[in-house]
Image (cartoon, rainbow, N blue to C red; front, side, top):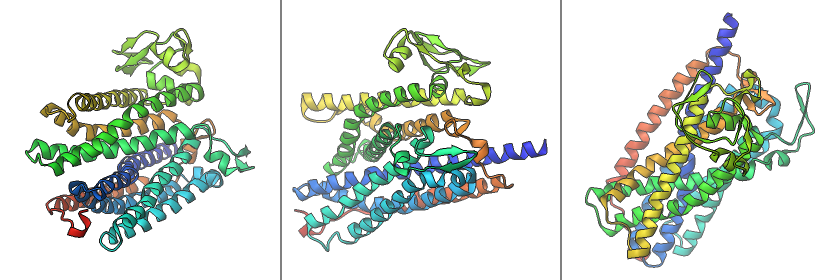
Length: 443
């Protein structure tokens, strides 16, 4: 009994530590993917005579440098945690998924090198050469996200190896990277990164405009990232729908958890809200036949339930998975509505909405986009339980059996608390310093 209790405590500690690390780091990773493109867009406008856009580019570049440094720390922590917390996974499948992590490392160093050049060379290179020096940053940021997510997509749809008696052979790393889940999962994450960046940056300037700073500098700071994020939202909803169909085909038990379906249902309805209690979803709003159509393209199709697999192979936190999925979808459509409001006003009046409610919506869009992204990862990762590699290796078989993992969780909380405090303090001090452009860079 003591051994079982120790194993359970270890598993809980490892899950909590990994969840905290991923949830904290993914925000900085999103900014690392999306921010460079926004900076280059602003600088490009600046080179065409938009002085306010050039000021924004210079300010955002400095902020990106700070965020990159902090993200590098949390990313390094995560790389150590993969081996320390999950030696069963890395020891068994390291030869299969090691390549994307190695390629991500190359992308990271390319991003770091060119970010240093970009920041140092603002007034040392010609304007167009300086702009070109930022392109590798944007490309490497996207590549970094792609390679990391391919490893996660492999965990959801493992390919490229043979497992015999617990030993891996016949390894094909590129087959593993290009597994069937890779296209939709990487596209979903990269679009999410650009949306989080755009909505988060726009929210900062929306707050400033609400406080009376209605000059052109702050309006451009609001509208440029907001337009980018809003333009990508419809594409993200389409990709999300494709991802849900992929889950329905390849991970039907995860879909059952996402919808809170206990038993197979012919013509299954879409379940909105509700709590999974005593083996069934209660208090949910049901749209008849909607799930069957969305998942299978047939309003009378049968959708498998949780009981399609033995109890030990089902996700435990069904309520969490279901509500996380619902929250992600609901926020996605709220963001779509905000973008439609902006587009409608621009088409009719050639200007953004003048309503303060629009500005309040832009403020809320920043944190809501982060919440949606976090809920997406909860759906993906918790929904795959109890498997760390779907239908191949259980989480319990991958966790480190050594005692004392909770001390690592305590240390991690302290580290992230310090990092958060320092990051906010530095960014606030930077915000108080006005950005000026040397006269020769203004054109």
